[in-house]
Length: 425
Image 1 (cartoon, rainbow, N blue to C red):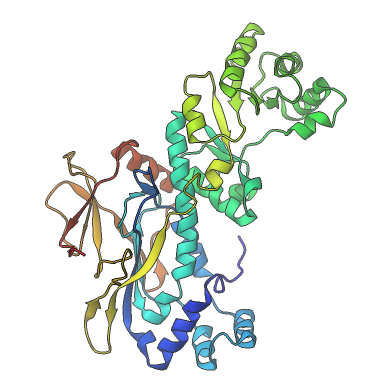
Image 2 (cartoon, helix red, strand yellow):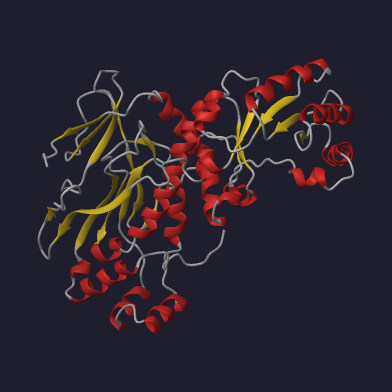
């Protein structure tokens, strides 16, 4: 992973606020920010919190080095006093968050930043750009995994988005339950299992389809996956089995009526003795398409655009809001904006997953850190303490937590949010 600074992955107004706050020492006052979404996307029963591991990597690289400071100076973004302050910037506060892979609802305090105003305000854009992207991908990926009903999924959307977004999307999809990715950088950086076969161009590069299949089998063995629909799918299956034999690992179908093609392919493979050869389908698949393929004899799917773009819900809608502020020599005071349609709830929140199976089970949010008097588990964990990262699970642990969280809550049931000691707005 690159060691390039992430300090300028931010909006100018963060530095404008810092510059002004430094002049009257407000930057030194304690502040608490929370990340939450006001509304889930239409039709979503819950969100999937994702991107925490990436944020922690970026937080370690959130440093204003000579190059960043020189550019800010030449561009006239901030004063010389602010440049001097930024040269020594290190976040020294605390961060609490939902475990990555956790389910959340509207209003869930998925991340809490507690530090000085100056240190904390600079993190807004970095935090929101990470979580809004990764959580949208993870939520869509989780729905697609549910629609696949246990059939393995390959994430293969790298060519449909920005190169770095593709790496992040592959990570998020794996956390959501995808089995592998086509993206090699995600394999290298995050140890996501990788998979891939060949495109139609490979078949077209050879004089005949059989020549192409023979070259692939010679290189990768009979267990490879052969793309059989470049010309005629029925003939492609015959050629594939003729070249690889009945031990052929899989065929891939990328076009046509996929349900009908899969049924015909399964029957043809069985008649040719390739009873263990798997049928993989690809081709602009999304959640509704997988639902329609539920009864087809398909052994796995490749999904691209629908997952890396977050489906019809391309952002999680997270915001980063100040909920408590400290004045010089005074205790923290709860704060919240009152703009119509964007009203906030003042004060730092705590939350729990309610596990007693009652009608109002789901999630409880409270201004009181005391847990509810019912079976529950806390949703926030300590992530950063005094600037040091104290929570860094492996991607396999994150993936397992998402699977456990999904097992607690039915995919077709909206996540109910209840409030305790929260004021009415």
